[in-house]
Image 1 (tube, rainbow, N blue to C red):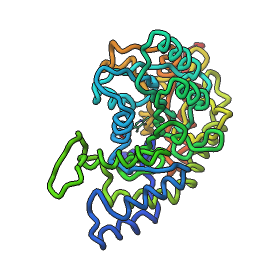
Image 2: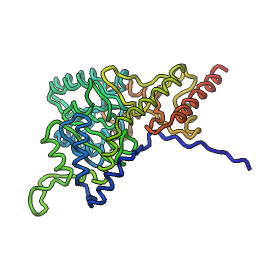
Image 3: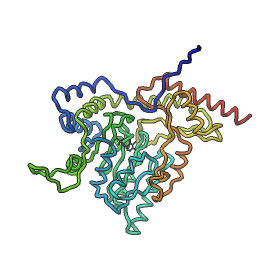
Image 4: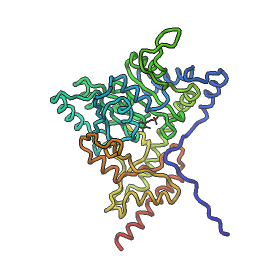
Length: 388
Ligand SMILES: *Cc1c(COP(=O)(O)O)cnc(C)c1O
């Protein structure tokens, strides 16, 4: 019988460990700090804040937990509205609903794929006139690229609305030379397995206000009143990061620069191999900062390319290569049906045509070239069909 050898599957964004993490994990074991508290947690917070230039940080069990705490600290509660990017992962908006509030979605701009600052400003001006301002704004920094923060900070300050930055996908990026996540009242990061660095699961809430971070730690540890017995006057959560996992984070943080470089190299290789194809366009890089290309994303104009995004995605799947459509906008998600969306066409068209390519920092040159070859071959065959 002939044997077929299948190529090794190529994943979208797998974890990429170094030789540093086990040192800290081992330390946790030998000192018996196997708990959601301990020296690795404290050190991870300090080292993370140093790395991104934030004032204070609280290490928590996920990026979603960090967002939940941020919204709670912003005073969001039942009946409130929160403005939120529509083109993002569902975790950005879920915590709004956990608190009994309602998201109002805002469209992206074409130049950064992130929340359109003009649309945000216009919406806030209009809401101010109606006396119906939202309780908070959540802006997402998508796929490793910062949103255009300056005008957003300005308009949120003007109406005294807390700006919360969801930088889960953009650790290592810059906006005007500084890390996104440090411009608003609070910022959050994620260390899920697919993010640029990982603790398997984990997150960080950062702020320049010590009081907010102190309160976040209090809420994240079941909100225990200072009493010898267990006494509680506030509703808390069990959201702290494990000391074992914080050890993984400390090791990962030391290689963050390498991980950013590797992801940017992936993008550059894809660009060299594919940019000439008709109808194929890469996610633009904004001039106000440096993105990490956490994921390399592109759009496919079916008329010019010869076939659509789904045909390309399925060809990649057939070749054991994982790729994903760009986020489905939240205003199109069944769970948020009925929620208001300001604009929406840009996000809708990015979803219809956008594709995320394998972008892990451990992707080899040969693997990157293989992905590009499948896309180029698919263009040729679709193009031949379309002109036949
Ligand atoms: C991953 C992600 C989150 C959630 O982070 P978790 O650590 O998985 O809870 C939130 N927002 C965005 C944009 C993300 O990509």
